[in-house]
Length: 88
Image (cartoon, rainbow, N blue to C red; front, side):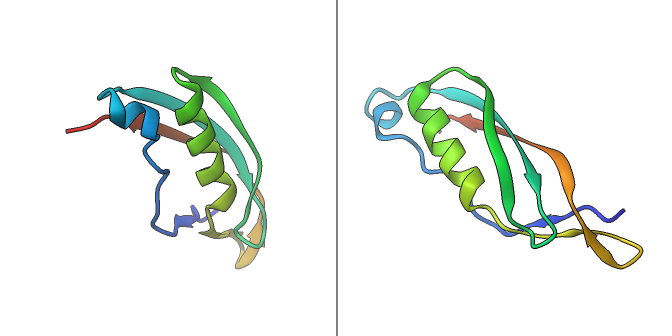
């Protein structure tokens, strides 16, 4: 099975973290359907609610080239995103 390739993009850094130079980590899981759309996005771990919201919104907008098996698109279950929000 080919691995789907992510179309570049990323979650928005939450304003509340920017104002206080805060950091956060969020883990989100999703499935990728045969059209390359993410479905069943859910936060499984988070250190900040605003970062969770931003990460979940990103997950719901993300688009991929779908995985394939024998040349046909297939659903990929359990895609994991791990986001680290940190100002340099």
